[in-house]
Structures are given as structure tokens and as C-alpha cells.
Amino acid sequence: MGTMRTQRPIKVSFEGEVEEINDVNDAADFLQRWPIDRRGHVYRSALNACSAAIAAQIPAGDALKAFTGFARVTGILVQSDGPEMPAGRTGAQNRMPK
Image (cartoon, rainbow, N blue to C red; front, side, top):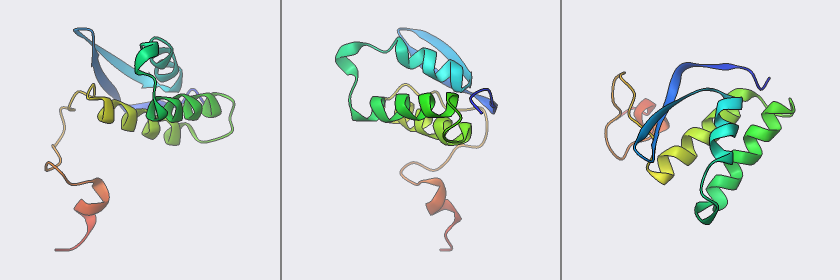
């Protein structure tokens, strides 16, 4: 399960470099390099999810969602080239009728 590749790479910007995360192993490697003094509960959740996916305990897609959430919360997520989501609205909110 841990080797499932993303449909599009998850792009993160850290220390002036943009890095592409293509699978759970890439995400786990990135998290291992994350500064120790910035490792909070969101970091631990993402790392635990990646570890669980690598051990085939949860789907890789769930771990990648946790990693994407970590990247968004920490401000390192690079916007994709696809259609942008309106600011302040989540995917679930976008699907709800107006």
C-alpha cells in the first residue's frame, strides 16, 4: 500500500526549494527531515499515517491526505497547476448546493 503514487505530485516548498512528493515513501522521507523544533501534533499525525500506510495498516491515499493537510497547515504546500479552490472553502463545502 505504501507505494501508491499520487495522481499529481504534492508540491511543497521548504528552505527555498520546491520538492515533489510522489508517494507515501517520499512523504515519510520529507517528514523525517522536518525540523525537530517544528514537530507538533499535525506533524505527528502525518508521520503516523505515513508509517501506517507503509506497514499496510491504512490506505496510502489516507496517508497522503494527512501529509497534504500537514503541508497546508504549515504553509509549505505549493498550489497545483489545476483549478484553484476559492479561499476559505474546503472540498466538502464546494460540493454543497448553494
